[in-house]
Image (tube, rainbow, N blue to C red; front, side):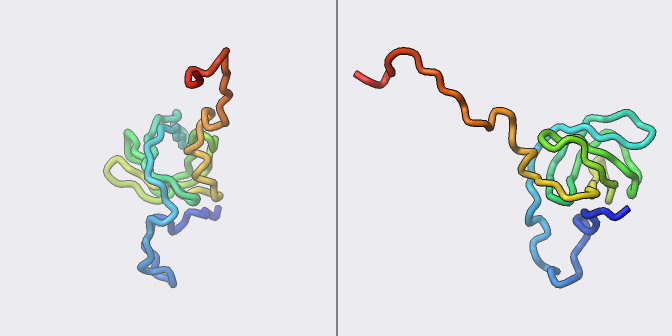
Length: 124
């Protein structure tokens, strides 16, 4: 299975070597669910998110290269694999690219409906 996020968490030794590796990665704090084969879904904290992957804080160690699915608000369940894991954090490389901005949008981001009753308080 090819993972689009492969290399997202590894140093770039190609033509882009030396370019800021965090470009395109949003630092944030979101609660999400993560599930792995043979385990119940667990609550995790998403600490950064990009089109190719994310970093989570999780309650127990996980094996690199293991297949996972992460449910992120606004994106649903996203399939991927564990790219790395150290000290309660893990990198997940997605199987397909996502639009990370969708995770920042909430149902309240729609244009609000303003109800006006009577006269405006600002008019005299």
